[in-house]
Image (cartoon, rainbow, N blue to C red):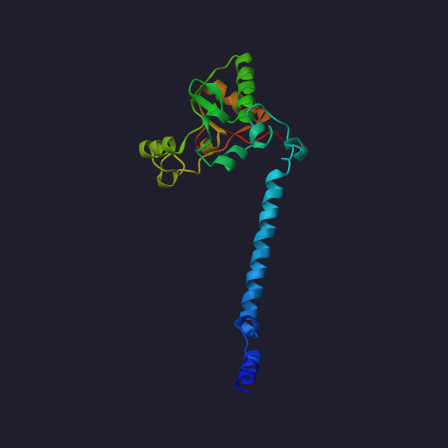
Length: 206
């Protein structure tokens, strides 16, 4: 009889895996499963995105230019290089020279050179004193000439149109200045700083 009783006791015992789970245990298991599925889905989406063919820049309606193709924008997207890289941080490889050591973004450089040739045909000359500026160059200008807000002639670091590769400071005689005032707009350039007749910025062609 004792042996039978022991057998009965063994049949009534429950192992941990047979013990009913508490509500907390069930919620924990559901949370683990849900998190695992979420990670799996995100991973699959990441792989799909990485393998997806890149969108053709031309599909956006942008016309490619030699130096802007890699960035995926075109000739009239002025300011885009500055938006991509940051004011005063545009790589030299993305700029075009308009005078020794003076550069602008491609579309502004192209239009500037056309304007310069037209001005020359009409018997006038200009000299480029400044064009694109890096952040450090703008800092140096502020030290030498002071901020506009303090009565100087320099914009704050990171806020100048020169840092976007859009502006030039020119040396002009009276006749050349009058030519610029009447003709520069047809090339997309405007005098944008009151009291600074030497400062011209490419605004795009209307």
